[in-house]
Image (cartoon, rainbow, N blue to C red):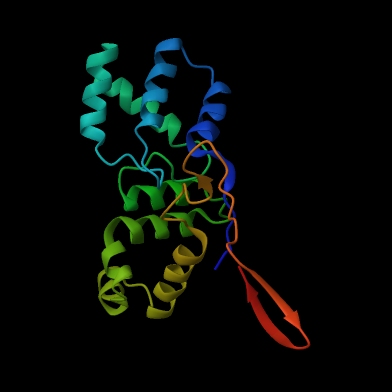
Length: 183
């Protein structure tokens, strides 16, 4: 189903615009650009260790500096971008979500950090036993995660710099209540 639309700008373009709004030194901006360039089509950094080493060598910076700039990139929209794992992606989104209750944020964080695999496998009784949460509460938290957090933060962005257009290869018409297909 086409329930989502693709934004005409790429994720890289979107993130670069946000980067330009940050007050970073030229060096920090170069680090951020390389981190952004290292994102996959979902918005994740899959081989962070290799990318970090490459940035450290090329720009002659400490690993800690790359980590600091990654934290800045992870505050950009879409929420969850720059994560290295699904767990980190969801935790970034929980941290950025505007909850009325810090207790709810903390509970979701614990659930994601410690029980994400059990949630995915619907092992609610195991989570209940480990956390003391009622099963109904675990189900509600699971539904919240499924309905409000996006494991694929880059899904609304085109993967390149041109717009895709679908050109139909046939035409469907209705004549006197009969469907006709024409090439």
